[in-house]
Length: 290
Image 1 (cartoon, rainbow, N blue to C red):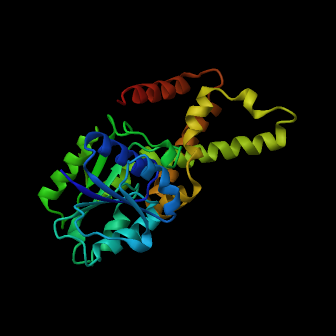
Image 2: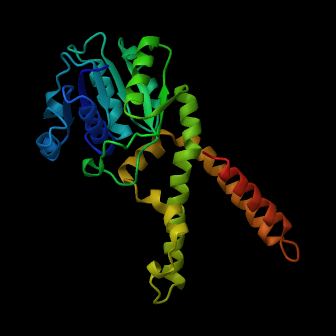
Image 3: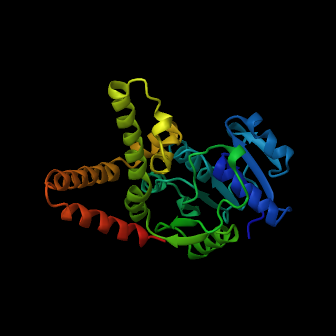
């Protein structure tokens, strides 16, 4: 297993990796890098990392695993920088935790050591960001999608799978392209829908709400449906731009689906059977999810 880790970005996911690694093996060396090193002082004081530095003082000598845990837009530049570093060990592996993969693979294809990067996406995020929300059990039972590309070595892919499984996760392997298509519907589209629902509700209340307070009318259903809209606007802006084509296609299907539901409702006078069947199919599909 990996013994010297360089971690880029000490937020929710990066911090949770550090906590779990140090819990399993206090002897593992973790060197954390960030834009604002002072913000990583709590992790250093708690001994979840062994050293902290800014992105301008990166050293990869002796590192056998580099984990890039920054927003997807900035991760492209960091991954390219790592792969081009003269002190990167030939056997070192670089992984990330971002929600978009195909764009990253395209950006590194021309680099000599592109085969040392293996894309990863833990399905364990939260609308709560930052190191202060990290925890050592974040990956227990979570899926981590591993997205190998043609230049990766089988032994490196297996080592990365064992790494995530040691943190409590289960791993799935798909191509970067398939990852981006699927996660559009399970993660990116839900965020677009949740954000739109909050905006529609806000606009309605601004015109028709009178003196009523929104809080009094919110139940668990609204909270559950819109929870993800509390995620970082910077992060979601980058995801939307980097996976634009897939998200636009999914949004078109969502608009069509709402149109079908609207028609069923408009035609329901005296016969609500179509509506019942629609909701019954949705219920069965939802209950079939694990």
